[in-house]
Image (tube, rainbow, N blue to C red; front, side, top):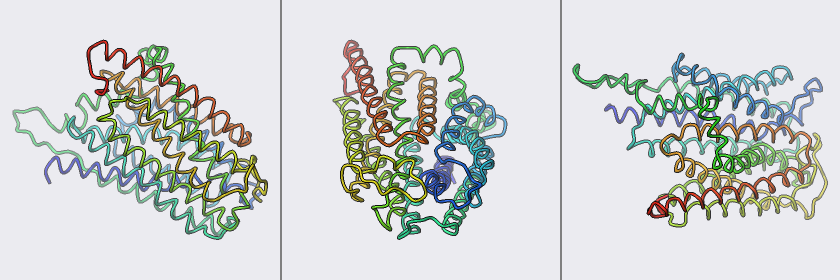
Length: 450
């Protein structure tokens, strides 16, 4: 196998491994609160929302140490150990205990930071400037497909169920634990690059595995969050404005990945399909994500109108979704008890409207994320690592905050928070984009080149 074929093989294995792990983990996150509210064990007092809040909070802080862990242990072993912690977290649901549940949440927050640092390292060392776009696309497509398989399993496994029994819970989480472990084991198939240079040439193995500038750039990625350079950058006008948009992506990430599925599963008027609809909702979120990411990723190369129309589409799509959810979902759905809720909002709850909103949530999220990543890469093309680090830090912190308040806030207040932050986030994005376009025109460049 040629060196290039070996690199592509590594990328495919990396993507398939993440697909398995996140098929298990994202499905777990989607159904966690519903499963917990259906527990018969009165000794368990955990909350899926609180758990995810801990995970995102610890994840943000752990980015400080994750580059050191990956540098010392190596990316392959780092991903294997992280995958084991993901599997242990999922396995907790087989026989839940409050102390183990929250302890595992802390450890998986650390493991997530290490896993994604190692993933970035593995991606960059198996890519060059000509293949990084292709390899990123291959990895992204495999990762996003995880939204389908786990949720499809839930849709069929929970068909006709209005209550999740102990047997149902154990069956699902044993299956998800095995799926996560399969993804973890696949990391061992990633091959190290061999030396293909002659003795008189530079050592390609060292260059690929640790000495290339792109690798050093990524390893430094997480350090930047806490360096003087990144702190200074976070107080610049552009970053402060874009931080409002980034904060919105953290809030709506929490809503569509953890809260909305719980709402659907709590609506008694959906009848025997209320639990299986959680899986169908996750599938349509994935359809929206992949459709939006694919279309706007391709259009970004030849978009003479810039990024603002895509962001405008994203906020309009989300506002339509929020409006329909407000009318369709009972106000107490996010915090409903085990028995669910029989309340009616402003219309008889419709399964079709609920699933359509899932698609809109995924589509709108892809609009915001693709354009945020695009404008950060454009504004900070010479040194993008600090900007992307701030982006991930702000997004994760806001996701943690949103998961925390989801324990207490009724649906209307959660929607209102997202509407307000989304509105101002769109305005601040427009401001940065307009200034970037004006600066580009002043230099005599074509606006479509952004």
